[in-house]
Amino acid sequence: MSPANIFDDLPALQDQALENRGLHDELERFLSTERELGVKNGLVWWFERKHIYPRLYRMAMDYLSIPGKFVYARNCTRSRQISQPPQ
Image (cartoon, rainbow, N blue to C red; front, side):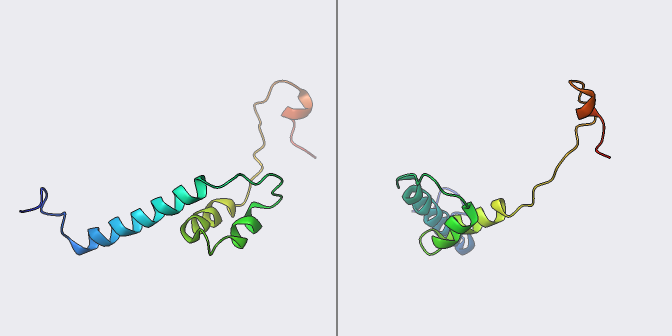
């Protein structure tokens, strides 16, 4: 029986399908655990669990390590103090 799509049997796509399945299993495992309240530092929390959730750990590091940036709202009209840049 031939595949429905000629690309279904490409080895590169089969490897990707296995990787996606692993990520799905890892995500399901993470979502099925109890929430931990009182976590002070998300980076530390993920670092301590990187052996349990290796793929989610890498995604969390990418997301949580983005530096924050203060954006001054110049057009704010509620208060003159807010609309003036700090001296």
